[in-house]
Image (cartoon, rainbow, N blue to C red; front, side, top):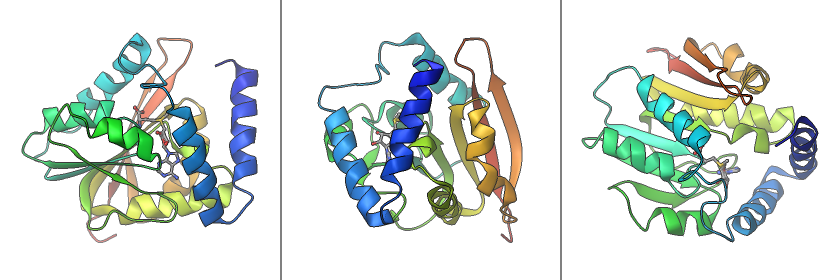
Length: 211
Ligand SMILES: C[S@@+](CC[C@H](N)C(=O)[O-])C[C@H]1O[C@@H](n2cnc3c(N)ncnc32)[C@H](O)[C@@H]1O
């Protein structure tokens, strides 16, 4: 998408976030069901840039015996299945606001499970030692909603657990300002990939053991 297209896109989602958080969730649910009217709308299976981003995210993960993994905003589960195959001993869950996307995700690829929920308003229950959230935060609009989502992401982490975020660079720095300000979290790594004309960053936060 062009810079002007990106700006319009962010504006549309900013407007959606003016209503109550539940109302925003309903709008996002309808929008993303419509967006998924055709399979693989972002071409995760064919686009080399998307494949590279998924692969890099797996590569930069600290080697640990993860047991509970969560992928927030998983769409049709392309990355969720990849991570589930990389950590077959772990229980992997993908969540998304689009029921239509999830019915395709559940059709196969790995032992990952999928659940429809709105990350602003709902929780999958329990805590996770590895949580991913990629290319999702800029859909949440105004800063209050970003704060709400950031707090939710933190509460999903077990003490010592890792939160791995992948978003466009340098926009990522703005999207993560609530996470940076959260004293329960420590930013442990940031990998900026600027090899293409669409730079992105993979940023890792750790929940403090006593946080
Ligand atoms: C661009 S896709 C990212 C897919 C995947 N994370 C990746 O990078 O391969 C963004 C996804 O976020 C989901 N989403 C948007 N708002 C959400 C919310 N409030 N709660 C849960 N999922 C949401 C959309 O339905 C969409 O499938």
